[in-house]
Image (cartoon, rainbow, N blue to C red; front, top):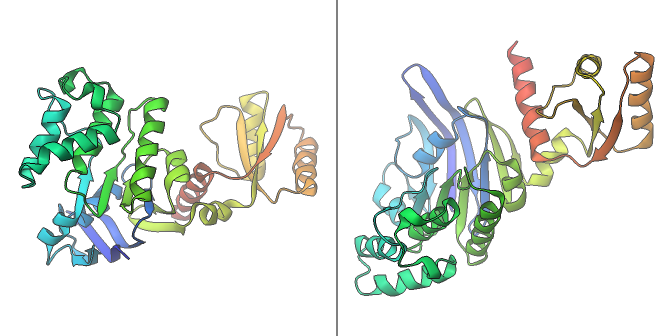
Length: 307
């Protein structure tokens, strides 16, 4: 494992942020750390990148302990935060060459900059000031800057926040190319579709603990093989159905999602139950669960247990 954490704990004052977190990441894969705001994702990344010292537990990155050998860990990694850390007053090329010089690449810094500009489709904008770049271009430049020193592990904290769909897809393609070349990616994201498309393994962090982990398919199986989406004509009907099936409401107005085994008999049971209760339903569709379904199921379960 190129990234390992065992029983990590971290508190800020009386607030426990990490409550015994275990993580295991294989080299050359994408590992996605999911969770709602305040779950501890960024704190976990800060511990793994040596920016925050854990209160307890152990963590090793590229074979080095994050507490005892922070310099060796930093030499093997790069960290790209939620916002592009680029110099707007310099050109894209100048930003990359500057990083190369800071990393003691010497004359090779210019050649490395050319290579990365080409790789991230920024060659045409190489000599423009970054202040003129679009959000997607700035994000690609930020990722390129993190690769100047050829790190073994890249930590991406919500890498596509604020990007339009086209720029997000371009960033996903860049991440896939990095992994194909042997780089390990550890990312946090609020876009569950992003984790579904990119990650080899995911872990759902909730209230400082890993609530669920595995491959995307394994964690989606947690909420059943299929999901029924029931669309109702009114909010009243939706609320009655949610109470009837003890199901959480989603962000989609007038739609209630229910776990299902995908059989016709289960569909008939659901419709018969609604009919017997006098609850009208406008439309029904069936599909395999998404990571959004898992996220909702796990967080709802924890809320119910806390009552």
